[in-house]
Amino acid sequence: MKELRTQVAIVGAGPAGLLLGQLLTREGVDNVIVEQRSRDYVEKRVRAGVIEDGIAKLLVSAGVGERMMREGLVHHGVEIRFDGASHRIALSELADGRSIMVYGQQEVVKDLVHLRVSEGSALFFESEVTLINGLTSDAANIEFKGPDGRVRITCDFVAGCDGTFGVANRAIPSSELCRVERTYPFSWLGILAQAPPATEELVYCRHERGFALYSLRSPTVSRLYLGVPPSSRLEDWSDDRIWSELNLRLATREKPEINQGPILERGITAMRSIVIAPMRFGRLFLAGDAAHIVPPTGAKGMNLALADVRELSRALVEKLKRNDDRPADAYSETCLERVWRAEEFSTYMTQMLHPSYEDDFENGIQRARLHQAVTSHEASTVLSRNYVDLNSL
Ligand code: PHB
Image 1 (cartoon, helix red, strand yellow):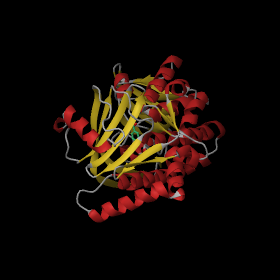
Image 2 (spheres, helix red, strand yellow):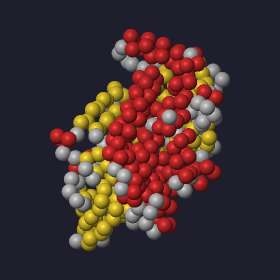
Image 3 (cartoon, helix red, strand yellow):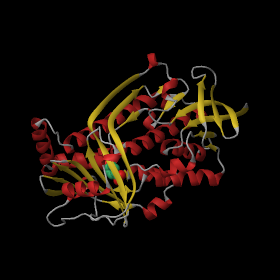
Image 4 (tube, protein in one colour):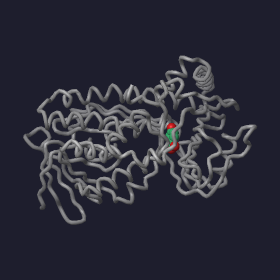
């Protein structure tokens, strides 16, 4: 078995693992990233595309924001649509001039991988981690099997950035871990379409038939979602059915048709919330989806993950370079306070915008909440601040 030595072994090359690698490298902390999937797979995995103000600034300060600043779309408001009427939330006016950046998660991943590869830093794709060991001893180690055989990495710390179903959180003894979870009675069917967006800002829509979201990626590519029953399968949804349902939910009197075009990508995502605590066990630190999942209605998943690694890189640098344990010891608690704020906001958005097919009491509450969100200055201010910059408040 080949042997390597590094300071931080990072499991997972999603946005969290890759940004952590970049932040550590910039501080002179040696690190290795190990990813189970191929480069092509991680670069093409389509996810949400809303980046908070403070997180966009973090990407710029990490040296990876150049293309995002050029190609990303800065938005100053969002639309909320219900009972057939549109209401604009003036995000920037209500959130101290801050704005959101619309730029796909896979573009962030591409930019990070490109930078890592051009710098020649260690990044192993198609490499499955089979063992994480020594977390409470003098040195940790991980083993993985890659295209060139087996490798053992001895390290000071392991960063688990490999998602909910990855190996990292499973390396924590179950007696040391608390996992809380909630599922929601719907999924999202998402499509990427070669069609100019018929809207300048994102539209979150509550319709009697279900939730819909009109988002975009560029002046020629739209990203749209439909709330569907959790039992829905992609085979149930022909192109015609998708477009007619989107039209029924999203069309307004002024714009009776949405722009259609070839569907480039489609998928169904179940909605749930998960929080795993603590986010640290000995020499292992969890970040991003490895520690928590939010429903996508608040667009918080990647922002939360990148905010975790902002904190984690600081903690590891202090520990490794200045022998200061305090930020690492506080890591889990500091993150979890923010994670729960994101869970609360994502749950609020989810519950307010997905009509119940069974419970008209719930539907009445949703309408009252929506009405308050768009008419009360205080309520729309809270919504705006959380939407635009929850992770840096
Ligand atoms: C997206 O553009 O993919 C998107 C936007 C907002 C969300 C979720 C996804 O809340």
